[in-house]
Length: 101
Image (cartoon, rainbow, N blue to C red; front, side, top):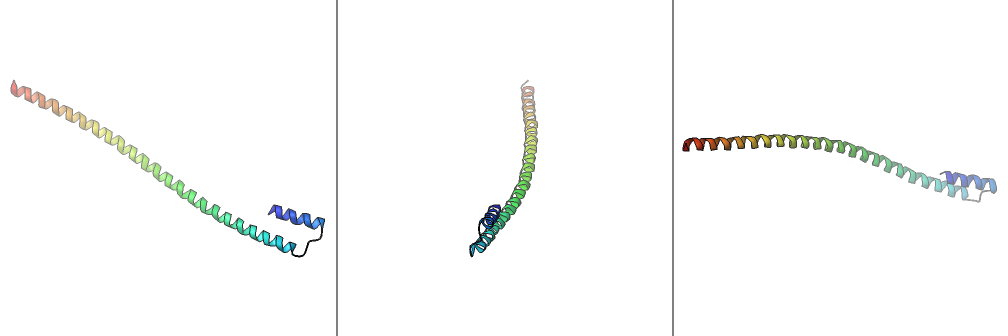
């Protein structure tokens, strides 16, 4: 827009405008305004998409934390079960010895 206005200002200062020149510049300004409006719409759409992505990233982060907590609980349960199995085996061994003895 600035370039078009500068061209218009320079052409007015240097010479008389040619017939139709102002309408050409006006048409060009209207075209550029349309392009600008499309870019603004695209920017708004991209802003909405960015916002949605941020919300989804927060959901993913929460799910990751939930998964980590579950993994921690599973490890604890595995350890408890391994200990219980070991103790059960030891008890069975002592029962066998007692029967043989």
